[in-house]
Length: 476
Image 1 (cartoon, rainbow, N blue to C red):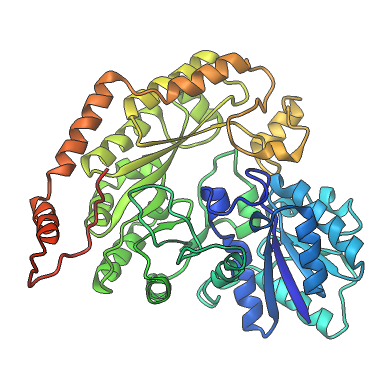
Image 2 (image 1 turned 180 degrees about the horizontal axis):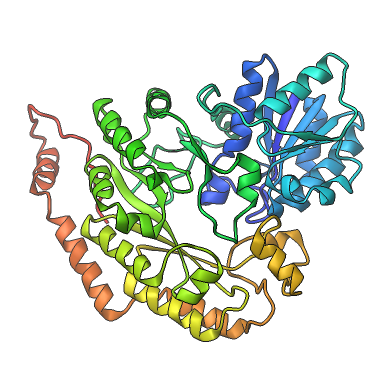
């Protein structure tokens, strides 16, 4: 029995978009984990990634060539249209192919998927065990009568590591030449680059996200042991010789003990590679000792969800932090030379133009290294989505608009011209900040004189008895 997994995440950059940033240059850990589990159960699994193809005609050719018995597709809300179009083509080519859809969107907006009879099964929440069980039932000619299958939360310690080669081997058919299946996105994290997930779920209550995540992964956070994560990193080092990586976890530093154990094990295992992780602003300011410890052994930057510079808005979205805490977190990052990737939103329900200006002024004070703005997008399954529907505020009429990118208004009551001004203004550095930034670059350039001695030796062809060690801080 042949099973083909399909990644249809082309709502952003479309077909033929491999290597074009995060959304087009990274694997789907969900599909990679499902593949690893199914292969471990003895099933034959391959992949079609729409980002690697030229158009729908090429997709049809691939389905006709591979002739799968079962097709599994993952769906976020923004992927609804390309997933459903994929299924339409599949059924036209070979109606008896069994189609299975899983992921966040069917888990929180089930009826929108069930309304399409060409979807044979939907898997809710985590899919590794349930999908493999379904394949076994199909193989034994004992297909479930019900279309909706509830996922089983797996023991993360017992799951095989994500099947990254599922993506890498497929991409190479289409001219992909990189050593690892993920594309670097900032100079601080050089190639070869990989991403990893140490745990699932989140213990916090932000209403633009919850309760979807609680349904998908259970309440709170389930985190793999430090030993398990280190073993995966060792495997990745042996297989890809990665030079940097990133944790996908929602908030790694929420568990002080885990982070402390990880730092010790990371160092003991001989790792030197720099990495980024996500963290909450309030925890960065509260756990400065943990931050300092992590910086000693590889931590290079944080993704921080600042979200807003208005205390009222932060309370409204149940973020659990304040403007002051946001700014304090940035100061901690500057103290330890950590790169700041700033996530923030504008255009939230009830948000005024004055409150958006507070976000703009906060960004100028924080002076992040990278700006990641969004116009608030109401995603199904969240408390704030329900609020927007109850108050008739949503402007989203096409699933393609579930993209978080700040290109169109998603909520009524906001002025697009003002929003575009605020978007541009939020990313303008003040003259004082630019001077500080230039000074840091000069400091970093001359901070390691031995680096320039090594370069001079290379130019002059002079050998050295002690070869240079890997450099943790690339030049900017």
